[in-house]
Amino acid sequence: MKNPSVLTSNISLMSFIALMVIVAFAVANPVHAADLFTNAKTDIKDTAGTGSAVEMALLAFGGIGALAFGFMSKNWLGAIGGFAVGVLFWNVITPMIGL
Image 1 (tube, rainbow, N blue to C red):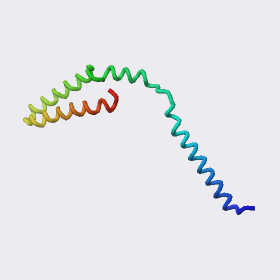
Image 2: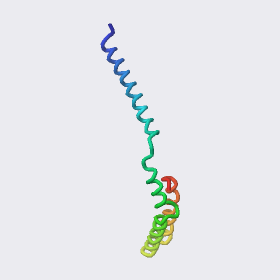
Image 3: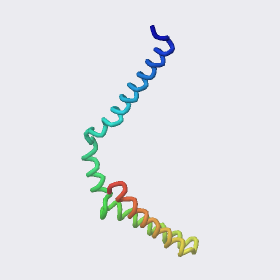
Image 4: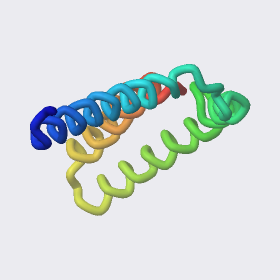
């Protein structure tokens, strides 16, 4: 008969391997799941995508904010630079989030 400590270590090793196999399947399985938000994604792209009213409003408010900052602080380079950075950020981030 085998030593009980060896038997216990073999059972714990097999349990660990079985757990890792279950975790591997559980992690890989959601890849095949259906996308529940397909309709919502198209609505968001239509609402806030390129050339939309939301984009124009964001750029208009950014321009108004830059003008207000320029008038109040007399730092026109900072105001124009801040607006330019905001526009660049918008143009870089929208393709990343899928708009």
